[in-house]
Image (tube, rainbow, N blue to C red):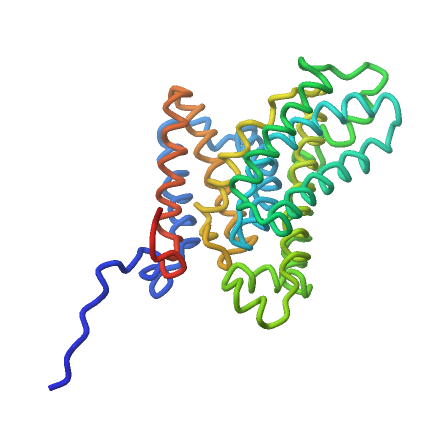
Length: 327
């Protein structure tokens, strides 16, 4: 008699969802439910002003989360995005008065270089990305304090530089269009470039990728460079909106960017997910953050909700077949 195998007791929620329902579908469902509940809780939630606020500031989270996505797709994580945002924030305000429009490429290049440093330490020195970016994040934040130990305001004569980003087009915040531009470029990069496809291969199975001839060092460095570039863009956008820089402005984006990635359905184990997942993850978190503020939920409790969302997102997307032993 043929023995019927029992289901593995360690079967994860990831396996269940991959066979029946994708995590991004659950995120879309949660967005609909959350939007419905909040609209009943406060009549102003669906006002044109509030919706514009949600998509405008949600786009900022989307940009840094897209950068985080590149690192996560390779099986890594970037905890230095907060430091990069803070450093670029103060750099941009100080540089724009000295070099004008050249401040934009200089700050973007700074993000690329910081990402490259993370990638080199990870791939050449072979220190795990968690430790690497935790360390570099602290160093970069210290550099932000060295550049400006306190918040710095833009000069009145420099306002026209900031108005390029702090404005509206057809009644919608410019940050939304920037976010959509980064989204499209990220999608095209992953979809059509050899490096984009290699990032997925590495995250799915790094050993097999290496055996097939994939350049692990190059591709992982590029992934972290893109993460640094996206963080730099956010630093520029935030400075433009505030007309000033702050050496701690990026601290909240570390946890938020990771939350947007995993809640959207991109697995921390790598190789699964993409820009659509991050888009809905960022939209959900922006909706949640705005809704909690509108209905008056305490700020400290909001952090607890965010932490719970990360745990839930990882529980749904985490592929335990890649990590049989949870440390």
